[in-house]
Amino acid sequence: MIRALYDWTMDLASRKNAVWVLAAVAFVESSVFPIPPDVLLIPMVLASRNSAWRYAAICTIASVLGGMLGYAIGAGLYEGVGRPILDIYGYGVKFSDFTARYNEYGGWIVFMAGVTPFPYKVITIASGVTNLDLGTFTIASVLARGLRFFVVAALLYYIGQPIREFIEKRLGLMFALLCVLLIGGFVLLKFIH
Image (tube, rainbow, N blue to C red):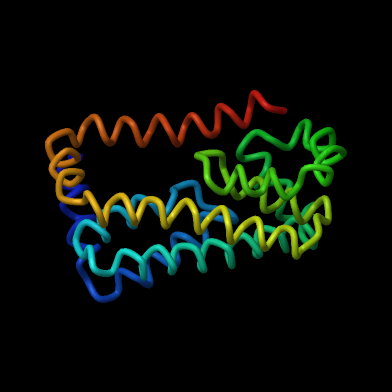
């Protein structure tokens, strides 16, 4: 099953419309979707190394725009939309304690969440709820998401074939690692509030 999913993703990565799918996933991941765009970015760069920088730029731009949607959800739709999304991720209960201290370190929080497995959507919504300065939010998001996606692209560009061989030989392990990182981000979220 994992092999079929990997082959499907690699096939998708080589199609013309893959960049639109990548942009869509990066956009919605920053505001509501739990799956990171790396699941498409990695195979797309492996399938076409010469497009690595373009793919990283697409991820960065779409992710920051999606982050602005998350910010808007927090700023304008918190009670109707934002709170239910945060409740899905188990963060609604003590959210008010978090927001009281948020703006003091908001730029750094956005940056750290943008480069780690921490669910970035929680931070984008929190930034809107707490009215973090939009300029600070945007700059921190561009720097963080750019760093994250361009580092992945650079690693794959410069040492892509050995990484591809490593992944293909250990698909089960790579899938498990992805799951651990994804779940780990949500567990971390539970423990920091």
